[in-house]
Image (cartoon, rainbow, N blue to C red; front, top):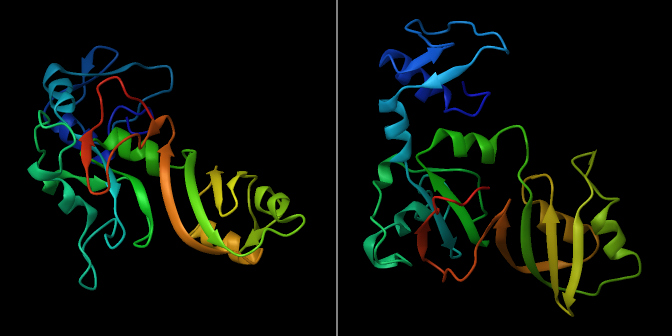
Length: 228
């Protein structure tokens, strides 16, 4: 069920225990039941209703907030999900305890980060298939001959060659990076390899979802018709 994107593994176990899972029209009640690729899996109305109520939140993370649990005195970005920080005052405030980070963003970095209660979205964003991400990067230093070419393709981190990246010079000290993989502090380390020091890093897109006009510290619910 998780592999087909119906729900997370934990949710699959819960729905099976609830009697809300059918294979080719027959209710499945035993955890770990094997299903062939050609067989059809469907969720019952209670499971579908529950999934419709799961919240996914988009936050414009300011610097100084961590992605996961609070650490070393730094708060988690999920704490920004409150009534006062709503972009749309009509959005209900979801229960923060049920929101988990779907990916990470360094404490010094800003921009788009996602918290979700929906295992389908979490798997989509942190699963084996990397979701394309776009960043604006301010830097100090001089772009030397061939530096852009190396940033686009030709660098290695941790003895492993990086996948091609789309890197565009927007202004004298501003680059736009589009990555198709996610290594630890990848952009900062890439820039250091060509003699550049990153002074600001802002994520503006994950897949098809953009940061848009969210102000720093604001959050909004993912729209019903939005898809990563």
